[in-house]
Structure formats: C-alpha cells, structure tokens
Image (cartoon, rainbow, N blue to C red; front, side, top):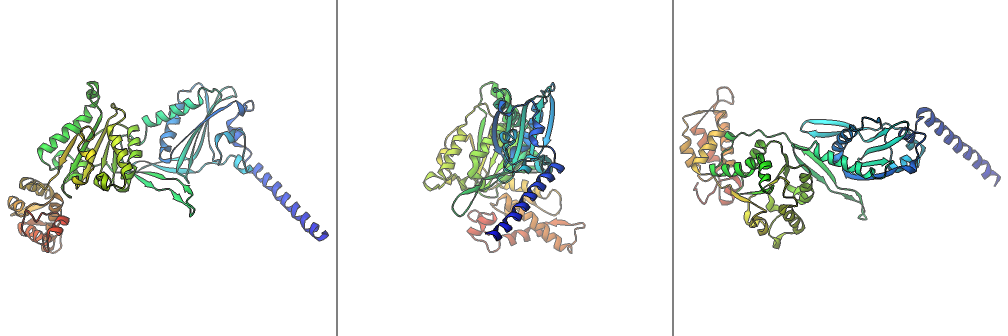
Amino acid sequence: MIEDSNILVPGFVLFFFIGIMTMFHYSKTNKKRISDEILFSGDNPKEFFIAKKTFKGFRFPDLYLSINLFLQQYNNFSLRYIDSAHPVNLNEVLFDSFYQTKDALINKASNKDWNIDYSKVTYHPIDNFWVLYDSNRTEFIVRLRYNEFNDICCLETACVESKYHQQIIEEINNLAKHNSVYKNKLFSFEFLDSVSDEDGYEYKKEIVRVRFSEPFHIEEPDIVIEEKIKNILQRNIIDFHNHYPKLKEIGLRGQQGILFHGPPGTGKTYTCKYLLSQLKDITKIYITGHNLHKLKSIISIARSLEPAILIIEDVDLIFTSREINLYSTSLGEFMDELDGFNKDQELIFVLTTNDIERLEQAIKNRPGRINQCILFDLPSSFLRKKYLESYFTDYKLEDCDLDFISQKVGSVSQAFLKELVKRSIQFSFEKNDFSSHNISINQDSIMQALNEMKMHGNKSVGSIVGFNLSKETI
C-alpha cells in the first residue's frame, strides 16, 4: 500500500501541474472568451429569447449576404462582428457552457469557399456573430454557422424582445430568397446520399451540391427545327416568360409544361439549350439521371427562386406507367407539383423523352399538367440540308451538292448528320496530307464518310448510330 501511495501521489501532482499550465497557456494566448465579446457586463443571458433555424449547406452564401443586408436598417445601433468557431449552439455560448475551456475562447473561424456562379467563388468564415448594441447593452445577436460534416448551416438569433427573435430569422430568410446568389443563374444539383454504419444508423445526412454551368449562347439562326415548332416554342415559352407580368394581370396561370418526344439524336437537348440561351432574368435548372428521384426537393427550391425553368431530361427513366414503375412515390409527388400550389408563381417545365409510350398516362394526357407535346422526328430532306449547311458553315466546300447528299443519306437523325460532317472533315484532312492548311471538303469525302458510317449496318445498329433502315436501304 505504501508503494502504491508513493506512485499515486506524484502522478496526481503531475496531472494537477499539467492542468494548471494548460489554463495558464490559454489565459496568456487567448485572454478573451466569446461570451465576453457578445455580451456586456450588464447583460443577463436569461433575458434573451433565442430562435434557431437549420438550412441546407448551399444556402450559406445567401444567408451571409442577407444578414448584412438586414442589419443595414439598424444604422442607429452600433455593430460588432466576430468570426470565431465554437462547437455549441448560441444558448450555450451565452451562458458560457462549454465542455472544455479552450472551446470558450476566441478561436478565429476558418474560411470556406462557395461557388456563387460559373467560375466565380466567394469566401466566408464558417462561424459568424453579429452583435447590435446601444449604450453598453446588447439588443440582439445573429449567428450563422456551417457544419461541414452534415453540410448544414444554422441561423440563430438572441433578442431581449420576445416578439422579435423569430421574426428576425424570417426576415433574413425572406431576404435570402429574394437576393439569392442562385437566382437567374444556370445550374444543376448533385445529391450525395446519406451514409450509415454497419448497424444502419445514419451518421451523415444527405449532402446537396450546386453545380453552376457556363451560359449557353445559341442564337435563332443556329437552331434548325421546323418553323411550326419554333413558333410554338416562341409563343408558349419565350413570349410567355417575357410578358408574364401582364399575362398574370389578365388571370393566366404561371405554370407551363412542355414535353419534347422523339427518337434519340433529333435535337431535343439542343433545343432545350437554345431556350435557356434565349430566356433572360429567369432561374435555369437542369435535371438529369439520379436527380430525377429528387424532383420534389428541386422544385421546392425552384419555387423560392421563381421565375424558373426546369429542364427535365429523359423523364421516361422514372415516370413510366404505374404498372411497371418502382418509383410511384416520386411520380405522385411530381404530378402534385405539376398541378401547382400557387397559380401566380412562374414555373416552366420542359420534359424530354425518347419513348413517349412508356410515360405515365396521367402526365402526358391531362391538360394543365402538360400544356403541349412536341414531336422531334427524324428531319425531312429539306431540314437535313439545313443541318448540313449549318454544320459546314466554318469549312470550305468544293463541288458539293447538298441537295443530293440530303436525299442520299435517307432518314437520319441530326446526331447522325453531325457525325457525318465530322467524319467528312477527317477524310478531307487525310487527303490533304494531314495538314489543316487550306483544307476543303468535296462530295467524294462526304460519300466516303457516309458509306463508312452505314457499313455493317442492320436495324439495331441503325437505331444506335442514328439512321432508319426501315425507310432507307443501305
């Protein structure tokens, strides 16, 4: 026992000495506590009413901007700003309730980069306090904190007036929607699913990423489609958006649904890009692939950023007939959204499909959900010539009869014609001794390219490459 005591006593002394030195270290290097910076000596934490709201992480730059806009109206107060990171909520900060002494001390928050447009980035601290005070008394506190692990941001307020603490959050949130960095931009979403451990416990929530895209620049002469289709798009999408404020005055509903259908490679996606290029002052959201399962969340975001247009590609992948659809919940949610909740909100849906027969009848056959179906079929001989002229614009043609070629290629898609032009340039490049200088394209090169593309063809191959053997014999 004596030997054990001799061992324990020096150990206890050493532990006590380390604790004293740790406290001395923090007192020398960081004299200020966060509670001392946001409260004055006369403030009583018990007098503050606290409100809190959590948002998806991508909302952080919106909220950061809107807090600063919100505070501008209080120019008769003094403002103190502190960026300091603390792992507890605002209530615990006010009462100086920390598990470890070091967490209570001022700790400059790290900066995080946020994409706010294509090739444009901003940086903000991940933990921020704004303190409005007057005559050495704190009136209210706003805090914005980002949790990187769960990709959420938390907006908190503390106010001495009970009727204002929740109101402040709502006003900041409304400002964030109205002045959002995502408004009138072109972007898509990436959803990273939640992560669970081996027992099924979800320890990391779903993460949402916003991916901005470079704006499209497609002018009217660049788009080759039938004139009647172009007129429909002009009236029901472009003009509808440009004149919607006046259309709303005479009672028109703000929701439009257009469905593009037809074989692959017939210009549906390119036409979508043309529409995005022509529309101004509108939020543009592109939805494809796995994100089709997240339509309810995406449409909810779009409503907060309206006016908005949503391009939803390949909807037949998820919105097939109920009898064979494993995702009927997503289908039902989407049809509810197409019915619309607010007739004054301007939301334009453009859906595309390669197989309209697979689509749920309730989507394609109910007016008001889809206002117009547009067939993008294989182009006529006249349009095929227009496509070839457009694709060959930047190249020198010699002895080429495009009328003959447009007839010769038969029933092919725009994608096939685009590849034909590319292949013709390659043949001409080879004939020019692999030199790009003074290269020209003749009819022989085009025909060589055509023969090569249709080589070994059958009906299945034709469907993949983009020509129709049922209408044209190789």
